[in-house]
Image (cartoon, rainbow, N blue to C red; front, side, top):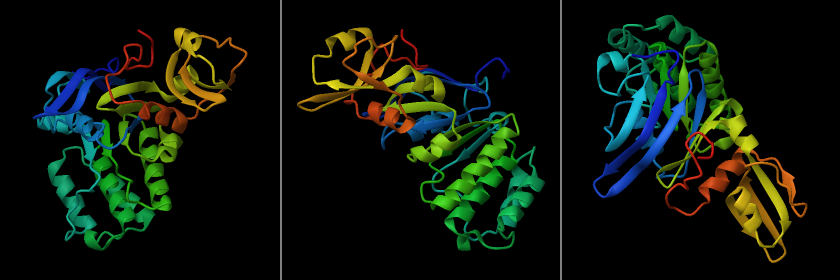
Length: 302
């Protein structure tokens, strides 16, 4: 059963194969309660597969997964605590917002109709208008309001803002932040839009080549990394003391993204802090292959 001392999401060695294709391999992650976790990775990295496994929409090939203290399934008790919103925003285009609210009340025991009505009124989204005639931003806001109305403990969002304009994205993310601030909700938000994620997320899951490259608090992960700029010389000493994530070399200069295991004492290099986009692109730019053993799921050396 769920416990306040147990992270809402815990996986160990989680894997999923579709025939000859490995969609997710050896994924070990932990997401603490009350966080908004950014799920980032290139297309085909396994983001949607991970979300489907967490939501009980797919079964793992190997490893372990616990969500809210239970094994994900299509059991009604489990699903009552899960909100899942896919990129295609699954709404009935011929139905009105009011129709959707009625369906939600019929299907969910903890349905909070007042919150949907209030949110839609604030956004100026008419209850009696067919969904197919609403704008993309209005449909996304309606879908989020409906998903939150079931009062889930875990919200899984798969690229929900990908097709929205900047203003609609900002409104959507502001609504999401308000819901988390109310307490009792943990979110995993998949997106390619790093600037949006940086605005509201405090936790990161980074996938590349179907593997977890990083998982942990964003501030802690940023503090562990540094960019070094210096002469294009042998970097063996740097690599002996630190983890070299990415190196960009020219004939005269080297720019290194490292994960520090202590202070950098080589005076030939100028050190600077790392931003989230720089960190993400550094790991995504690594050659495909197994995650190095020194990169753990929680951002600590092993």
